[in-house]
Length: 194
Image 1 (cartoon, helix red, strand yellow):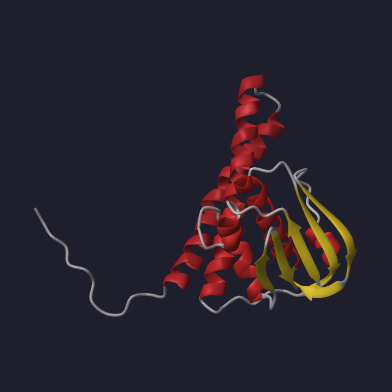
Image 2 (cartoon, rainbow, N blue to C red; image 1 turned 120 degrees about the vertical axis):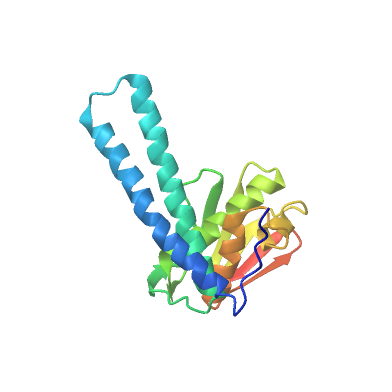
């Protein structure tokens, strides 16, 4: 039996290695996605095959979103997050197509990374619903101040990222902080300042 020694010398920057892996994984993922779309457009599949191709396509989109999140987290952790800033309304950013998340109040226009921040807010809200055992959660928006309710005692450590059970919430908090915002818990309310 051969025994391999650990390599000597400096360990490569882990965050940079993760970023590189995310980038490199996009090529085979694009191939999977491209072929599923080609098969779906071909029109020659039976109903079961069409359903399977659609499931593969949805899974490929989910993988792409996860790679985007992992790459963003790696850039933040490696000090290389350089967001493309654009104007966005905070009420629109807190809104979600997911029926479990609603947003009310009055927004304000801020300069931010809109897709990353919208995904971050949605991920925090979904984690609060999922791990809190509640059917829905509400963002109350007052300009740059957002409050998410309810965040139950069971959901709080997951939403804050202290108990890493939800990757989206973990990344969400880091994105908000990297964009100069803050996240804190106050009873059953998660307060986010942008």
